[in-house]
Image (cartoon, rainbow, N blue to C red):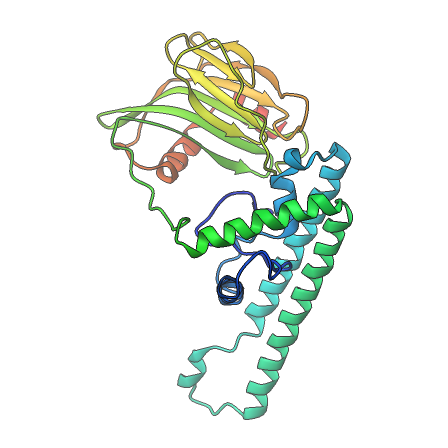
Length: 320
């Protein structure tokens, strides 16, 4: 099961195992924060902010070493295992309103047993996440811990004011689209497309692999200053991958790649922290494929995924 990506902002920000101190967040915000935490605990786990996620997101600002980052990533893996185990157990022992419609009577003892088991599971997961919090804070100095607490206090306040409300993505209406998506635990696609009539035109496609696997981390390096004009693209793993349509130059961090007549750029090592990834090579594939029109990023990903996996060179790189 793929790990959760905790560094991506989503409509609801939760922090399960550390609650800001009284001095940081007023009572009203603390009450709101707790309400959000417990109301969302079994509804949507994809927006959780735990100290391990915040520490990884701010590792550069905290001045952490690569060794500390790796330890935090291991703790983040444990965080995911705790939550997935909790959700699996909850699915098996769920007290549901559907019981109102059971043909057979439900005993009070059965209900009490299920509810008590549910409470015990919640207590167990909260204690496990608090223990994980303590391990994270054990890696940090007091100043670093205070930095993270202040950061979370600011975010809870912003959420309370409605500054981080959900935004519905708009469909592509301008004839072009750039974005990225995860193809597997080790591979991301980053694309720059333009649309005409019923087809998409691939300006460039980065197929980017990790040396080990893609693991969530924030604190990207500054966007590299490159001697070029308007760039399209974004980030894959921990690095910027960009493209200049006018010169047909791809940029992997600050490394230029003359794409020429090719379309695909193969990149290796996007999970590295300090050393930029390597450009393995470029591949020429037909640039235009049928789509039926222009739409949003999720739609484009599905069409693009099916298209690029047809080509042996890309299959070999992904599978290698």
